[in-house]
Amino acid sequence: MRVAVSSKRKGWHILAALLAVALLAAACSSSSGSGSDSQAPSGSDQSQQPSGEAPAAGPKVTLAIEHFSVIEGTTWSGAHHRAAQRLVEKYPNTVGYIYREEVGPDSTNPFAEDMIASEGADIIIGNAEFMGLPLIELADRYPDLYFGTVIDSDLSSRANFIRFYPKQYQALYLEGLVAGALTQTGNVGIVSAFPAVQVLHRQAGFVLGVFEAARILNKDVNVYIKYVGDWYLPSEERDVARTLIDQYGVDVITQQTDSVAPLDAATEAGIWFVGKDMDVVGEYGWATTDTVAISFDTRWEVIYDRMIKDWLAGDRSPINPLFMGMADHMVLADGTLVPTVDIMNDGKVGIDAISPRARAQIPQEILDLVEARRDQMIKGVWDPFFHHELVSNGTGLDLENLPVPPAGTVVKPAGQMPTTEWILGQLNFDLHGVTILE
Image 1 (cartoon, rainbow, N blue to C red):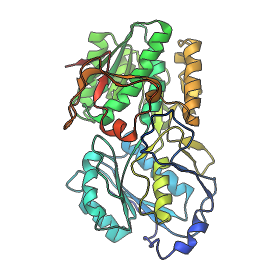
Image 2: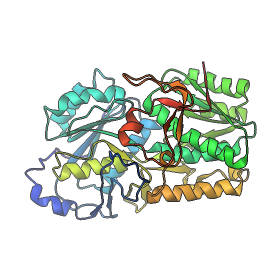
Image 3: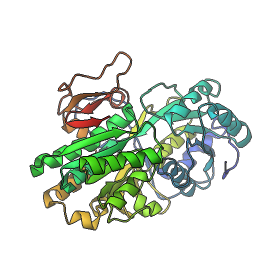
Protein backbone atom coordinates (compact mmCIF):
# COMPACT_ATOMS: atom_id res chain seq x y z
CA MET A 1 0.00 0.00 0.00
CA ARG A 2 1.29 3.49 -0.73
CA VAL A 3 0.34 7.09 -0.90
CA ALA A 4 2.17 9.93 -2.61
CA VAL A 5 1.84 13.45 -1.33
CA SER A 6 4.53 15.37 -3.15
CA SER A 7 6.08 16.17 -6.51
CA LYS A 8 9.08 14.31 -7.91
CA ARG A 9 12.60 14.76 -6.60
CA LYS A 10 14.71 17.66 -7.78
CA GLY A 11 18.46 17.41 -7.42
CA TRP A 12 20.01 19.40 -4.64
CA HIS A 13 22.97 20.28 -6.83
CA ILE A 14 20.70 22.09 -9.33
CA LEU A 15 18.95 24.10 -6.65
CA ALA A 16 21.85 24.79 -4.32
CA ALA A 17 21.38 28.52 -4.75
CA LEU A 18 17.92 28.29 -3.19
CA LEU A 19 18.99 26.46 -0.05
CA ALA A 20 19.33 29.58 2.04
CA VAL A 21 15.73 30.47 1.26
CA ALA A 22 14.44 26.96 1.91
CA LEU A 23 16.14 26.78 5.27
CA LEU A 24 15.69 30.42 6.34
CA ALA A 25 13.04 29.44 8.88
CA ALA A 26 15.29 26.89 10.53
CA ALA A 27 17.61 27.81 13.37
CA CYS A 28 20.46 25.38 13.21
CA SER A 29 22.09 23.94 16.31
CA SER A 30 23.91 20.65 16.00
CA SER A 31 26.63 18.46 17.40
CA SER A 32 27.83 14.93 16.85
CA GLY A 33 25.81 12.20 18.56
CA SER A 34 28.50 9.55 18.41
CA GLY A 35 30.94 11.16 20.78
CA SER A 36 32.95 9.16 23.26
CA ASP A 37 32.81 11.68 26.10
CA SER A 38 33.28 10.38 29.62
CA GLN A 39 31.93 13.69 30.91
CA ALA A 40 28.44 14.63 32.02
CA PRO A 41 25.85 15.37 29.33
CA SER A 42 25.77 18.90 28.00
CA GLY A 43 22.93 21.00 26.68
CA SER A 44 23.99 20.68 23.04
CA ASP A 45 21.95 18.48 20.73
CA GLN A 46 21.77 17.09 17.21
CA SER A 47 18.56 18.74 16.09
CA GLN A 48 17.99 21.79 14.02
CA GLN A 49 15.35 23.78 15.81
CA PRO A 50 13.16 25.42 13.18
CA SER A 51 10.64 28.13 13.82
CA GLY A 52 6.93 27.58 13.26
CA GLU A 53 7.23 28.93 9.70
CA ALA A 54 7.40 26.55 6.73
CA PRO A 55 10.32 27.10 4.35
CA ALA A 56 9.59 29.09 1.22
CA ALA A 57 9.28 27.31 -2.11
CA GLY A 58 12.59 25.83 -3.12
CA PRO A 59 14.24 22.42 -3.09
CA LYS A 60 11.93 19.46 -2.65
CA VAL A 61 12.59 16.29 -0.73
CA THR A 62 10.55 13.09 -0.69
CA LEU A 63 10.73 10.95 2.43
CA ALA A 64 9.96 7.28 1.79
CA ILE A 65 9.35 4.98 4.75
CA GLU A 66 9.17 1.22 4.51
CA HIS A 67 7.12 0.03 7.48
CA PHE A 68 7.77 -3.51 8.66
CA SER A 69 4.17 -3.82 9.89
CA VAL A 70 0.79 -2.33 9.17
CA ILE A 71 0.40 1.27 10.30
CA GLU A 72 -3.12 1.38 11.65
CA GLY A 73 -3.41 0.51 15.32
CA THR A 74 0.33 0.05 15.92
CA THR A 75 2.51 2.17 18.17
CA TRP A 76 5.81 1.64 16.30
CA SER A 77 4.87 2.03 12.64
CA GLY A 78 2.03 4.32 13.67
CA ALA A 79 4.52 6.71 15.29
CA HIS A 80 6.79 6.70 12.20
CA HIS A 81 3.80 7.38 9.96
CA ARG A 82 2.60 10.21 12.19
CA ALA A 83 6.13 11.67 12.12
CA ALA A 84 6.16 11.87 8.33
CA GLN A 85 2.69 13.41 8.26
CA ARG A 86 3.79 16.06 10.74
CA LEU A 87 6.77 16.95 8.57
CA VAL A 88 4.53 17.37 5.53
CA GLU A 89 2.31 19.66 7.60
CA LYS A 90 5.36 21.59 8.79
CA TYR A 91 6.93 21.99 5.34
CA PRO A 92 4.10 21.65 2.79
CA ASN A 93 6.13 23.25 -0.01
CA THR A 94 9.26 21.23 0.66
CA VAL A 95 8.58 17.76 2.07
CA GLY A 96 6.60 14.90 0.56
CA TYR A 97 5.92 11.45 1.98
CA ILE A 98 5.40 8.05 0.38
CA TYR A 99 5.41 4.63 2.02
CA ARG A 100 4.92 0.90 1.91
CA GLU A 101 3.53 -1.33 4.65
CA GLU A 102 4.36 -4.89 5.78
CA VAL A 103 7.78 -4.84 4.16
CA GLY A 104 10.05 -7.85 4.72
CA PRO A 105 13.79 -8.07 4.03
CA ASP A 106 13.28 -9.68 0.60
CA SER A 107 11.10 -6.82 -0.60
CA THR A 108 13.01 -3.92 1.00
CA ASN A 109 15.24 -3.08 -1.97
CA PRO A 110 12.71 -3.79 -4.75
CA PHE A 111 10.25 -1.44 -3.04
CA ALA A 112 12.99 1.14 -2.51
CA GLU A 113 14.09 1.10 -6.15
CA ASP A 114 10.49 1.40 -7.28
CA MET A 115 9.92 4.44 -5.05
CA ILE A 116 13.15 6.01 -6.32
CA ALA A 117 12.35 5.42 -10.00
CA SER A 118 8.62 6.09 -10.06
CA GLU A 119 8.02 8.51 -7.18
CA GLY A 120 11.27 10.38 -6.74
CA ALA A 121 12.22 9.16 -3.27
CA ASP A 122 15.21 11.02 -1.82
CA ILE A 123 15.44 9.63 1.72
CA ILE A 124 14.51 5.95 2.04
CA ILE A 125 14.01 4.51 5.50
CA GLY A 126 13.46 0.97 6.80
CA ASN A 127 11.73 1.38 10.15
CA ALA A 128 13.09 -1.88 11.61
CA GLU A 129 16.66 -3.14 11.44
CA PHE A 130 15.90 -6.67 10.23
CA MET A 131 14.23 -5.36 7.08
CA GLY A 132 16.09 -2.04 6.79
CA LEU A 133 19.67 -3.35 6.65
CA PRO A 134 19.44 -4.48 2.98
CA LEU A 135 19.25 -0.78 2.03
CA ILE A 136 23.00 -0.54 2.61
CA GLU A 137 23.39 -2.38 -0.71
CA LEU A 138 21.78 0.57 -2.51
CA ALA A 139 23.79 3.32 -0.83
CA ASP A 140 26.78 3.15 -3.18
CA ARG A 141 24.53 2.93 -6.26
CA TYR A 142 22.64 6.08 -5.31
CA PRO A 143 25.26 8.41 -3.75
CA ASP A 144 23.00 11.47 -3.99
CA LEU A 145 20.27 9.83 -1.88
CA TYR A 146 20.04 9.01 1.81
CA PHE A 147 19.12 5.58 3.10
CA GLY A 148 18.71 4.61 6.72
CA THR A 149 17.33 2.26 9.31
CA VAL A 150 16.93 2.08 13.06
CA ILE A 151 19.53 0.32 15.18
CA ASP A 152 18.81 -2.96 16.92
CA SER A 153 22.29 -4.38 17.56
CA ASP A 154 24.10 -3.92 14.22
CA LEU A 155 25.87 -0.58 13.58
CA SER A 156 26.75 -1.04 9.89
CA SER A 157 26.64 2.24 7.99
CA ARG A 158 27.85 4.21 4.99
CA ALA A 159 28.18 7.97 4.58
CA ASN A 160 24.69 8.03 3.06
CA PHE A 161 23.31 5.02 4.98
CA ILE A 162 22.28 6.62 8.26
CA ARG A 163 21.74 4.62 11.41
CA PHE A 164 19.52 6.14 14.04
CA TYR A 165 17.63 5.62 17.26
CA PRO A 166 15.87 7.83 19.84
CA LYS A 167 17.03 7.91 23.45
CA GLN A 168 13.88 6.22 24.65
CA TYR A 169 15.77 4.94 27.67
CA GLN A 170 15.58 8.47 29.11
CA ALA A 171 11.77 8.47 29.16
CA LEU A 172 11.77 4.83 30.26
CA TYR A 173 13.83 5.81 33.30
CA LEU A 174 11.09 8.29 34.25
CA GLU A 175 8.50 5.58 33.72
CA GLY A 176 10.52 3.31 35.99
CA LEU A 177 10.39 5.87 38.79
CA VAL A 178 6.60 5.88 38.49
CA ALA A 179 6.37 2.07 38.35
CA GLY A 180 8.66 1.60 41.35
CA ALA A 181 6.61 4.04 43.38
CA LEU A 182 3.25 2.53 42.40
CA THR A 183 3.84 -1.15 43.08
CA GLN A 184 2.24 -2.36 46.29
CA THR A 185 3.19 -6.03 45.91
CA GLY A 186 6.79 -5.12 45.14
CA ASN A 187 6.57 -6.96 41.81
CA VAL A 188 6.95 -5.20 38.45
CA GLY A 189 6.74 -7.16 35.18
CA ILE A 190 8.03 -6.68 31.64
CA VAL A 191 6.53 -8.58 28.71
CA SER A 192 9.48 -8.52 26.32
CA ALA A 193 10.23 -9.55 22.74
CA PHE A 194 13.68 -11.18 22.81
CA PRO A 195 17.20 -10.31 23.99
CA ALA A 196 18.70 -7.68 21.65
CA VAL A 197 20.78 -4.61 22.40
CA GLN A 198 17.84 -2.36 21.51
CA VAL A 199 15.64 -4.22 24.00
CA LEU A 200 18.32 -4.49 26.67
CA HIS A 201 19.29 -0.83 26.68
CA ARG A 202 15.66 0.27 26.82
CA GLN A 203 14.90 -2.15 29.65
CA ALA A 204 17.99 -0.87 31.47
CA GLY A 205 16.58 2.66 31.52
CA PHE A 206 13.29 1.41 32.99
CA VAL A 207 14.97 -0.84 35.57
CA LEU A 208 17.24 1.99 36.77
CA GLY A 209 14.15 4.07 37.48
CA VAL A 210 12.32 1.24 39.28
CA PHE A 211 15.27 0.46 41.54
CA GLU A 212 15.97 4.13 42.26
CA ALA A 213 12.38 4.67 43.40
CA ALA A 214 12.63 1.52 45.52
CA ARG A 215 15.80 2.79 47.23
CA ILE A 216 14.32 6.21 47.91
CA LEU A 217 11.12 4.72 49.35
CA ASN A 218 12.92 1.89 51.15
CA LYS A 219 10.90 -0.72 49.28
CA ASP A 220 11.89 -4.24 48.27
CA VAL A 221 11.02 -4.41 44.56
CA ASN A 222 11.47 -7.25 42.07
CA VAL A 223 11.52 -6.83 38.30
CA TYR A 224 10.47 -9.92 36.35
CA ILE A 225 11.19 -10.17 32.61
CA LYS A 226 9.75 -12.86 30.37
CA TYR A 227 10.36 -13.09 26.62
CA VAL A 228 7.78 -14.09 24.04
CA GLY A 229 10.16 -14.53 21.08
CA ASP A 230 9.09 -11.77 18.69
CA TRP A 231 7.72 -8.25 18.55
CA TYR A 232 4.12 -8.99 17.64
CA LEU A 233 2.62 -12.18 19.08
CA PRO A 234 -0.66 -11.11 20.72
CA SER A 235 -1.64 -14.53 22.06
CA GLU A 236 1.79 -15.22 23.54
CA GLU A 237 2.03 -11.69 24.93
CA ARG A 238 -1.28 -12.14 26.71
CA ASP A 239 -0.16 -15.49 28.14
CA VAL A 240 3.08 -13.99 29.43
CA ALA A 241 1.25 -11.04 30.96
CA ARG A 242 -1.18 -13.37 32.72
CA THR A 243 1.72 -15.47 34.01
CA LEU A 244 3.41 -12.39 35.44
CA ILE A 245 0.17 -11.27 37.06
CA ASP A 246 -1.15 -14.61 38.32
CA GLN A 247 2.03 -16.42 39.28
CA TYR A 248 4.39 -13.60 40.25
CA GLY A 249 2.02 -11.09 41.81
CA VAL A 250 2.90 -8.29 39.41
CA ASP A 251 0.74 -5.20 39.97
CA VAL A 252 2.57 -2.91 37.51
CA ILE A 253 3.32 -4.20 34.03
CA THR A 254 4.97 -2.81 30.92
CA GLN A 255 6.08 -4.25 27.61
CA GLN A 256 8.86 -4.37 25.04
CA THR A 257 6.49 -5.86 22.44
CA ASP A 258 4.07 -4.27 20.01
CA SER A 259 0.56 -5.66 20.48
CA VAL A 260 -2.17 -4.34 22.77
CA ALA A 261 -2.45 -7.72 24.56
CA PRO A 262 -0.41 -6.80 27.71
CA LEU A 263 -2.50 -3.66 28.13
CA ASP A 264 -5.69 -5.69 27.80
CA ALA A 265 -4.42 -8.15 30.42
CA ALA A 266 -3.62 -5.29 32.78
CA THR A 267 -7.08 -3.78 32.29
CA GLU A 268 -8.78 -7.11 32.98
CA ALA A 269 -6.69 -7.72 36.10
CA GLY A 270 -7.15 -4.19 37.42
CA ILE A 271 -3.42 -3.46 37.68
CA TRP A 272 -1.31 -0.58 36.45
CA PHE A 273 0.10 -0.49 32.92
CA VAL A 274 3.07 1.57 31.71
CA GLY A 275 3.07 2.20 27.96
CA LYS A 276 5.71 2.54 25.25
CA ASP A 277 6.31 4.28 21.92
CA MET A 278 3.08 6.32 21.88
CA ASP A 279 0.41 7.87 24.07
CA VAL A 280 -1.94 4.89 23.81
CA VAL A 281 -4.73 6.68 25.71
CA GLY A 282 -4.64 10.01 23.89
CA GLU A 283 -3.67 8.69 20.45
CA TYR A 284 -5.66 5.48 20.18
CA GLY A 285 -8.03 5.36 23.15
CA TRP A 286 -7.00 1.78 23.91
CA ALA A 287 -7.56 2.28 27.64
CA THR A 288 -8.06 5.03 30.22
CA THR A 289 -5.84 6.60 32.82
CA ASP A 290 -7.44 4.28 35.36
CA THR A 291 -5.20 1.59 33.83
CA VAL A 292 -2.40 3.49 32.09
CA ALA A 293 -0.28 5.21 34.73
CA ILE A 294 2.10 6.76 32.18
CA SER A 295 3.38 6.19 28.64
CA PHE A 296 6.21 7.63 26.63
CA ASP A 297 5.82 9.11 23.18
CA THR A 298 8.46 8.92 20.42
CA ARG A 299 8.58 11.81 17.96
CA TRP A 300 10.57 10.30 15.08
CA GLU A 301 9.97 13.52 13.17
CA VAL A 302 12.78 15.17 15.15
CA ILE A 303 15.23 12.62 13.73
CA TYR A 304 13.79 12.78 10.22
CA ASP A 305 13.84 16.58 10.33
CA ARG A 306 17.60 16.42 10.93
CA MET A 307 18.05 14.10 7.93
CA ILE A 308 15.90 16.31 5.71
CA LYS A 309 17.89 19.44 6.60
CA ASP A 310 21.17 17.64 5.90
CA TRP A 311 19.94 16.29 2.57
CA LEU A 312 18.66 19.69 1.44
CA ALA A 313 22.03 21.18 2.34
CA GLY A 314 23.76 18.60 0.14
CA ASP A 315 25.68 17.16 3.07
CA ARG A 316 27.54 14.05 1.90
CA SER A 317 28.68 13.20 5.44
CA PRO A 318 25.64 13.70 7.69
CA ILE A 319 25.72 12.92 11.41
CA ASN A 320 25.80 9.14 11.68
CA PRO A 321 24.65 7.52 13.88
CA LEU A 322 21.85 9.83 14.92
CA PHE A 323 21.08 9.23 18.59
CA MET A 324 18.68 11.94 19.69
CA GLY A 325 16.85 12.35 22.95
CA MET A 326 15.01 14.70 25.25
CA ALA A 327 17.47 17.57 24.63
CA ASP A 328 16.72 17.46 20.89
CA HIS A 329 13.49 18.96 19.62
CA MET A 330 11.58 20.66 16.84
CA VAL A 331 8.53 22.89 16.55
CA LEU A 332 5.50 21.40 14.78
CA ALA A 333 3.29 23.26 12.33
CA ASP A 334 0.88 24.18 15.13
CA GLY A 335 3.67 25.70 17.22
CA THR A 336 4.04 22.76 19.61
CA LEU A 337 7.63 22.12 20.69
CA VAL A 338 8.32 18.38 20.89
CA PRO A 339 11.44 16.65 22.24
CA THR A 340 12.39 13.41 20.49
CA VAL A 341 10.93 11.46 23.42
CA ASP A 342 8.84 12.47 26.40
CA ILE A 343 6.48 11.02 28.96
CA MET A 344 2.90 11.46 27.81
CA ASN A 345 -0.60 10.25 28.69
CA ASP A 346 -4.09 11.28 27.57
CA GLY A 347 -2.67 14.19 25.60
CA LYS A 348 -0.72 15.59 28.53
CA VAL A 349 3.07 15.75 28.87
CA GLY A 350 5.57 15.83 31.70
CA ILE A 351 4.49 15.48 35.31
CA ASP A 352 0.90 16.21 34.25
CA ALA A 353 0.96 13.02 32.15
CA ILE A 354 0.91 10.81 35.24
CA SER A 355 -2.59 9.39 35.68
CA PRO A 356 -4.53 11.41 38.29
CA ARG A 357 -5.41 8.18 40.10
CA ALA A 358 -1.79 7.02 39.99
CA ARG A 359 -0.47 10.40 41.04
CA ALA A 360 -2.52 10.24 44.23
CA GLN A 361 -0.66 7.03 45.13
CA ILE A 362 2.87 8.30 44.44
CA PRO A 363 4.85 10.02 47.22
CA GLN A 364 5.63 13.67 46.55
CA GLU A 365 9.39 13.07 46.62
CA ILE A 366 9.09 10.77 43.59
CA LEU A 367 6.82 13.21 41.76
CA ASP A 368 9.37 15.95 42.41
CA LEU A 369 12.18 13.69 41.18
CA VAL A 370 10.33 12.83 37.96
CA GLU A 371 9.78 16.52 37.28
CA ALA A 372 13.37 17.47 38.10
CA ARG A 373 15.01 14.68 36.08
CA ARG A 374 12.79 15.36 33.07
CA ASP A 375 13.71 19.05 33.19
CA GLN A 376 17.41 18.20 33.46
CA MET A 377 17.28 15.78 30.52
CA ILE A 378 15.45 18.32 28.35
CA LYS A 379 18.23 20.78 29.18
CA GLY A 380 20.82 18.09 28.39
CA VAL A 381 22.57 18.26 31.76
CA TRP A 382 21.65 14.84 33.23
CA ASP A 383 21.34 11.29 31.94
CA PRO A 384 20.54 8.04 33.79
CA PHE A 385 23.33 6.19 32.01
CA PHE A 386 25.80 8.82 33.20
CA HIS A 387 24.52 9.06 36.76
CA HIS A 388 24.19 5.36 37.57
CA GLU A 389 26.63 2.50 37.44
CA LEU A 390 25.58 -0.34 35.14
CA VAL A 391 26.12 -3.73 36.75
CA SER A 392 25.64 -6.99 34.86
CA ASN A 393 23.04 -9.53 35.95
CA GLY A 394 25.00 -12.27 34.17
CA THR A 395 22.14 -12.68 31.67
CA GLY A 396 21.59 -11.10 28.30
CA LEU A 397 22.87 -11.67 24.78
CA ASP A 398 26.28 -13.02 23.83
CA LEU A 399 27.58 -11.01 20.87
CA GLU A 400 30.47 -11.91 18.59
CA ASN A 401 33.65 -11.40 20.63
CA LEU A 402 31.55 -9.89 23.42
CA PRO A 403 30.09 -12.40 25.89
CA VAL A 404 27.66 -11.31 28.60
CA PRO A 405 29.72 -9.99 31.54
CA PRO A 406 29.64 -12.20 34.66
CA ALA A 407 27.03 -11.38 37.30
CA GLY A 408 28.10 -8.52 39.55
CA THR A 409 30.52 -6.97 37.06
CA VAL A 410 30.45 -3.17 37.10
CA VAL A 411 30.57 -2.70 33.34
CA LYS A 412 30.10 1.07 33.42
CA PRO A 413 30.88 3.06 36.59
CA ALA A 414 28.73 5.91 37.85
CA GLY A 415 29.73 9.38 36.65
CA GLN A 416 30.87 8.28 33.20
CA MET A 417 28.84 8.75 30.02
CA PRO A 418 29.02 5.73 27.71
CA THR A 419 29.43 6.34 23.99
CA THR A 420 26.59 6.12 21.51
CA GLU A 421 28.22 3.08 19.94
CA TRP A 422 28.45 1.31 23.29
CA ILE A 423 24.82 1.93 24.22
CA LEU A 424 23.51 0.90 20.80
CA GLY A 425 25.92 -1.90 19.99
CA GLN A 426 27.47 -3.32 23.15
CA LEU A 427 25.05 -3.02 26.08
CA ASN A 428 24.30 -6.73 25.89
CA PHE A 429 23.40 -7.54 29.50
CA ASP A 430 20.47 -7.26 31.88
CA LEU A 431 20.97 -5.06 34.90
CA HIS A 432 21.83 -6.70 38.19
CA GLY A 433 18.79 -7.57 40.29
CA VAL A 434 16.24 -8.49 37.61
CA THR A 435 14.80 -11.97 37.28
CA ILE A 436 14.68 -13.51 33.80
CA LEU A 437 11.89 -16.10 33.60
CA GLU A 438 12.10 -19.10 31.31
